Image (cartoon, rainbow, N blue to C red; front, top):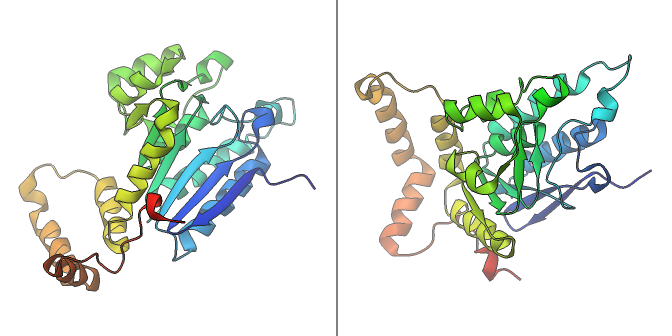
Amino acid sequence: MAGELVLYRRRGGTATITLDSPHNRNALSARLRAELSARLDEAVTDDAVRVIVLTHAGPVFCSGMDLKEAAGPDASGQGVREFPHILDQIWASPKPVLARVAGPARAGGIGLIAACDIAVAAEAATFAFSEVRIGVVPAVISLTVLPRISPRDAQALFLTGETFDAGRAARIGLINVAVPLSELDAEVARYVDALQLGAPRALAATKKLLARPRFATPAEGFTEMLALSAEFFASEEGQEGIAAFAAKRPPRWAVPRVSDRD
């Protein structure tokens, strides 16, 4: 049997999931989708994992759905039906997920990036919602992309399918930052180190807070948010964090910085 298309490595509190199908530009084939879903489950259920990094082998992050599998009279669209689960695994993960993007992303590949909590890209990376140019619609990925980018940018980029660079991707909110390729790993490590300073339950609750619908006014949400705040101040994590701050020591959940590990 051929080697795995999605690699998994845990080092310290970081699980790195690598798309490793460069022969077809890391296209979302049925096999790659199944392996990616399994690796995401593995990372989420491993108590030792604090942060998940989604990255790629080869020059392309992800070219979107495997069009060879989608072609022909027997095409079932199964990939489209499976893909929402993968996007939801990333979006709803209680652990922060960070995308490391060193090369081009297209269509469904951008959906993966948008589902992540944080995305760091090399300046040379490019992006395109290429669906309309092959006669399909960016329907499923719209559910992760549209909360990230402005309506005007979505209108132009979805309708034209034009290619845009990492600088624009950062300006419109699709990614957090674009850096030179030589600085990509250091920037990813900086974010990983920062995320691993957060308490696990507090991070999971904060992700839920960020994903919930907005209140119409601040006053509408004060009662609910006060209860959430009080719960975490009184929690084991909250009390440990307060004690660690007073003692000028790291809290028990703190993970050594990437640069400090063997």
